[in-house]
Amino acid sequence: MDVEHSAVQHASAQPANPWRLSVAPMLDWTDRHCRYFHRLLTRHTRLYTEMVTTGALLHGDQARHLDFNPEEHPVALQLGGSEPADLAACARLAQRWGYDEVNLNCGCPSERVQRGAFGACLMAEPQLVADGVKAMRDAVDIDVTVKHRIGIDKIESYDFVRDFVGRVAEAGCEVFIVHARNAWLQGLSPKENRDIPPLRYELVHRLKREFPQLTIVINGGIQTDEQIAEQLQHVDGVMVGRQAYHEPWQMALWDERFFGQVGPAVSREALEAQWLAYLERHCAAGHSWPQAMRHALGLYNGLPGARRWRQVWSDHQLKTLPPAEVAQQALAARLEQVRRQQETDARRQAQLPPG
Ligand SMILES: Cc1cc2nc3c(=O)[nH]c(=O)nc-3n(C[C@H](O)[C@H](O)[C@H](O)COP(=O)(O)O)c2cc1C
Image (cartoon, rainbow, N blue to C red):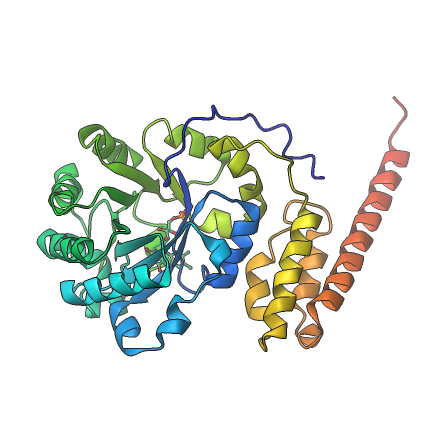
């Protein structure tokens, strides 16, 4: 069992709301394999799909976009779109497929999304968002939520985001996930738009104070469990994106720390075995494993041997082997690196002056 987590303090076990912790929707990252892997790490954290556009859903391969593993619950489908009738039709699909929530993206700044007139530019059209939310709420019983920014371009005033939330709430939205920085629609790439506009958490805290009846979830730049706990003093929930993806093992303690679940801690090795079983099933169904495995490459991060383990799993020459065989090679490489590290440490110790 990993001992590094045992020292972490437990937060008081308050009755959890369903949005207390979530992993952010991330295009190309939070596909169904990624979500299955995350679910092995945490039972209660809410998971989001990548954004799917209404056009792709209504005119494309619905099963490819919507199928998920039943283990993934609670899981939300994120939609990109702006046309209320299309949003309603897609919300119906989400409900039929068994999603727990449908979320509307009002935070993505990419040019492609702007051309489609949705994502972050929707913040300039709160009535259109309100109409979309109402159409979805009229169409389905599952939760309808909105993910947005605190502003667009150079609009820095709190009033802008307050009026947006106020208008959309009037249409029946009760849960707002707020990425606590502006989206600059000109001149920044989507990646830069996740780092450069400054984070202003205090605006999100103020939203919660002024709309106490709403569920307000904060997002953006939150990394440590201590930061999560701090944010939960001000808002109802925290959504974590990049940190959860890159350092997945951090999530293994979240059920205990943030949802008050008492139970035996799982070891990384036991979790890897469960994940391997998933990869084996995936291969038995005729797929190859590397697309799924890429999401799990950070499993041993922070432990000696993690780099070698990752290298073996990323080795192109091994991609046609069954996952169990690659796992054996990765384990051997990891243990070898650990052994070498121990030898180096022992040598260093021996050279130290006594006392
Ligand atoms: C690779 C990547 C893809 C993303 N795709 C989406 C998306 O499809 N929908 C969305 O609302 N946000 C998307 N985001 C933004 C995240 O949901 C989140 O708001 C952002 O990364 C800030 O949170 P963080 O600092 O915890 O990562 C994406 C972020 C990344 C890194």
